[in-house]
Amino acid sequence: MLTCAEYIWLDGTQPTQQLRSKMRILNLTLGEVNLAELPQWGFDGSSTNQSAGHVSDLVLKPVNFVNDPIRGDNNYLVMCEVMNADGTPHKTNTRAWLREEMAQGAEKQEPWVGFEQEYTLYQYDRPLGWPANGYPAPQGPYYCGVGSDRVFGRELSELHALACLEAGLAIYGTNAEVMPGQWEFQIGYRGFSSESADPLNMSDHLWMARWLLSRLGEDMGITVSLAPKPVSGDWNGAGMHTNFSTKSTRDEKAGWNAITVLVQAMSALHKEHIAEYGADLADRLTGLHETCDINTFKMGESDRGASIRIPEPVSNKRCGYIEDRRPGANADPYRVSARILKTLNGVEKTNYISG
Image 1: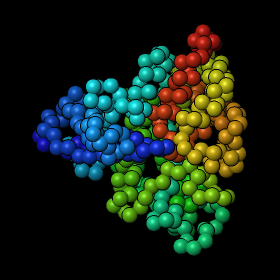
Image 2 (image 1 turned 90 degrees about the vertical axis):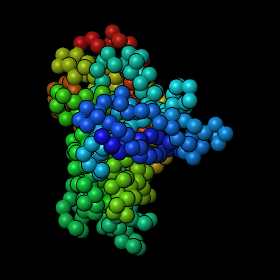
Image 3 (image 1 turned 90 degrees about the horizontal axis):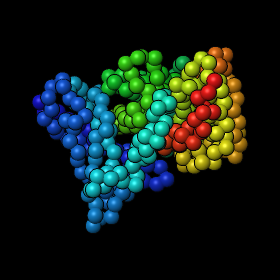
């Protein structure tokens, strides 16, 4: 059966990579599609900041796919890694970094990751719903608000959530955020035994969900911004809070010790983590607006001003997950996950898994 496959990849734009995609017609077996059936493809890397013009051919290698909710049944969104012509990962292929950290030992700890993706909607050069001149009323009524004077962009947020569900992406919630015109959706563990929350799969899902959000915004004339501080002044920034756990942190007996040892290791490597957590992060991590200062590391139980927040249910049960509140909205989930796993891999195993 002839079908449309939208090949999606990350380009070489710096300091923040951008999404690119193109569509290919494939003849696939109806209802029996698997990854092996999706062929590799090529593209012009000189037009995506990934190669010089005289050696411009690069390879798209399919690594994950979901249903395409825009084109409908039997069409697909295909997440790809960028490879060199010789089959090695391209230098901009951050998913390969994550694969490497998984292979270095982290996979044995059965890591789970989830992302709370904040974003800001724009129409022309203003956040959606903001007056043409000046500013809206101060923050306060907008977070999880209801009403046309408090919420702007719900139509796109709802459409996006339904599209993610139709695609089969692991979305588990949405909400209006603190700044007007700002929203959040979450990708991660939903409690279903049939779903995998491993870092590779969840990072793929976040990138495809980001693609869907921007693509749906096209039809409404709305632009999606992942800037970590879209509006200067007394307005909240936008983050990509990252929830992380392992079989040790989730263990009822060993969990609290495992959490403590992991967070101590993350504290010692604070600067190394910050370097992977998105561009212009200092504009957001000021110590105000529910953030910890970029030069400070702090763990806090139920503290949204901490670098690492321990949710109250986790604190009460003494096991579960941690929330890394440092990544910016524009962070690459592959890089964030890889950095956390690199720290996990560096922790002395006997200390980490002991109760």
